Length: 88
Image (cartoon, rainbow, N blue to C red):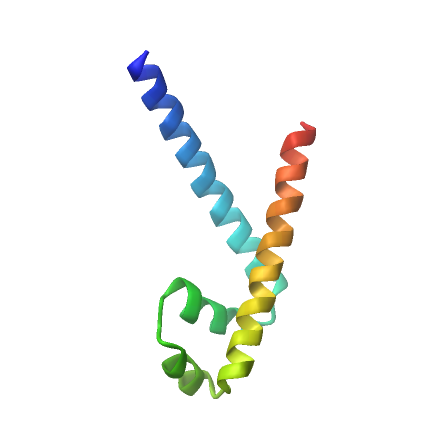
């Protein structure tokens, strides 16, 4: 029973990782390049906001606006995928 639980846990984790990769890929495709670059550097790569803003020539408020927009896209994409999975 413990081995089965471990296997189910591993499969769940792999499914979640695959879902995250799919969501990120779709959000990247739907996002303007500059918004995606800002989001990636800030949220995925963990760069300091001031460094990202300087690198991309953005103001801090614009940087956070871009991050917000991409996060909104990510959430909407996740909802669509999960709804489709529930439908199956």
